[in-house]
Length: 566
Image (cartoon, helix red, strand yellow):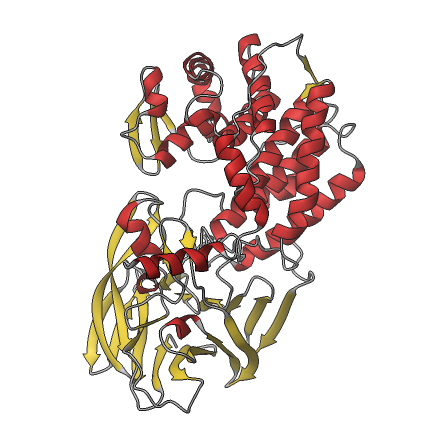
């Protein structure tokens, strides 16, 4: 890449940032606060309410000192293991979270947990290593407090360590990152500020509450979706909100009724939205960074919310609901996701911004992609996320791994690095109408205008009770220039469980695991199969097939594909 192109790439990335992200980044890197390790007598607050059992995630401590994170198993022995440079950074972060304290069947591993907490205190000197970075500190603080509230005992040395971790976190809040990291910091400060009594913990509580008061209205959109528009991170933050409700009901004297009511409202709206980001199998769609077995499932969060007196309510501000001929459509207007379903099929459509302009780190180049389940089985998918590092990270963020249109081999949004985006696609001209005994959704985006001035991709989904017809067009909005358009292809990534058989030219039969048959017909365009990948979890990437349809035509390139299940 030339120096001029690299400079332009950086400019188109940095120009969207907020000033606080820039000057706080320098502050975070170069300001090195000291940690006062002097402690007077520590006082614990006494709960007046009952702590409800939170979500129990999968077991990760599988043997004494042996952990499985991100589908990678490793034994950690000795102090150096906590920061082993041979292990992925994200894996080490998970090691420091201590999620297993509150995981499934955690009581069976009580002795291991006691020993592990003692090890962490002894082998992670104050402020040094991965474990003292703000994000893992935040998750660990919460997990230790939740474990204690569940009836387990932290020793004197462990309580002192927990107190110092919160003191350090208050000095290292991630204002330079914002987004879900800042919410995690705030949650931890609230948990520590309530768990301990005294003036200093009260200052942590005030700081955490002030961050939540500022950030929740910005980060949770009017339709209830988290503004980074990742179903996985939405679920993580929904669980955070429910934990905060649980804490408020456990310590009613420390958090006022207005705070509790506002948190419950946020929880209701987020739970309602989360239902629309899931397939009939009860698991999330893969839009932006998303993978299974990281965040809690819909059923887990629904059950947890009910235990706290929270039920999802669909008709909230920012949500549009329609019915037509047995189909229901829910449009999360601000987030930009549309969920259409009946008893046989479910489609989730992405007509969304890639995320907030100043925080696109978890974005993929997936604008106008979609996923489709038929008869309860996933059929058309996006590629998912298996890693946050290396060449695979770039590939999995690319347009090529999503069920949408790629132009000239380029990405619809200019994703680069591991968490950066330069030029980004903007959806325009969204319309939703009743048509052909169902719904027609049309939308366009301008992400390819950096290639050719005025170049647009427009997509139409026409869904009835028995089929989904997808039409694509690539065209120039400026008709004065008749320059030939670059090669454009629509990809339909198939779930690995789908078996594909050629019936005749431009007609394929797709067999689902339950033996149901779906017909895929290409009415316009040149179609063929190619290999692709599907990453349902971190650490897992599976080979799958992808139907590729080359758009054809003069002046305007187009294709039309019919997926029929009835």
